[in-house]
Image (tube, rainbow, N blue to C red; front, side, top):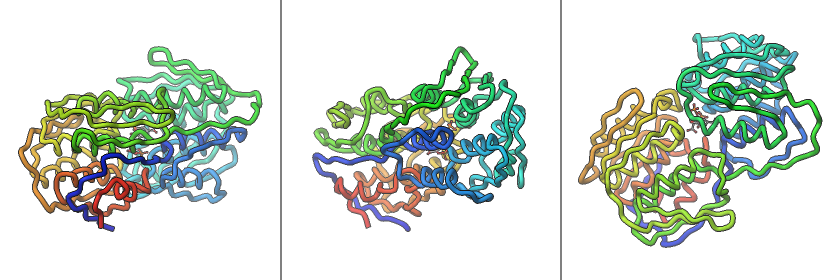
Length: 406
Ligand SMILES: O=C(O)C1=C[C@@H](OP(=O)(O)O)[C@@H](O)[C@H](O)C1
Ligand SMILES: C=C(OP(=O)(O)O)C(=O)O
């Protein structure tokens, strides 16, 4: 499905309910499988969460998790620790290119039995579940935090708990802290000192407990971008959010202040308002919030302003090589952009090419990041249904705001 967005303007005030964070949802689903006393509210309705839920419930021995990176990594650790369970864990053709060696080696060092079925270092994996007795492992922390979260999530069920020593510069740190915080909320003792994380085993049975998933901040980013490209005075209310978020992408509050978008908490909602024009060049290190890089780059393109984004080394192994994809699509629109292995530099531009059709590379964030440009030009987004990976109602919600979509 391709969508055409005619040049649009949006209502002065609107409200949108955003689905639960897929990162929190997928962690809590795994924890619920290990500790059934956990109940979850406001679970994400994303494809990635549905596939995680399915994988944890099925008794099949061949499980396809499609494009879901967190599901692939978290389930590898989960099935590796399920005694007497044998599964093949596979995914989309892109998933078969996304590296998982660091996690597989760490688990096998702890006593797991995981083998590669196709290319070395990537899914599909053949996993023979084992009881893991060993409790110490060292791993490289600068490729993906998901490997670390995967190990931490199963740690309270390991006989002796777990001590992880992290090597290299730690990437996507807020996602590790989110995992530790959720473990803490269900009564697991953890410690994160310098580069060592330890998790104690959880033995005592707890009373039933309900955890509420906060709405997804990465999904909120597209509304921040829409406001940055809208006239002063435009307002959008999003729910349900918390002042003390576990999600690193809540950094949007400070980042988009630089674009003249103010955030105010009102009970469990955030009220976003464009209060000023700000077209000065921007510079951010997004090591802690890689998923909002595309959103910010396209906001700057729409405003015609220069930006320098660094800390982007993980973008090359996500749903697509996001740096390459951004370069191709931004250049189609007439933008000038330089990329390296871990950064991008967008130059200021005076105008955008019209009637461009944006390719999305099986990446939900490519589709959603470029959509706000419809406030400036008519634009086509190809394979627009990719948004369901994290935000199934995205196009409907844009229509609610006043976007003209066919
Ligand atoms: O743990 C998580 O829920 C995630 C961690 C991040 O991945 P990396 O640690 O690979 O950057 C992020 O990009 C991804 O969307 C979700
Ligand atoms: C990178 C992402 O997801 P995952 O790694 O879980 O596929 C994302 O949602 O932007």
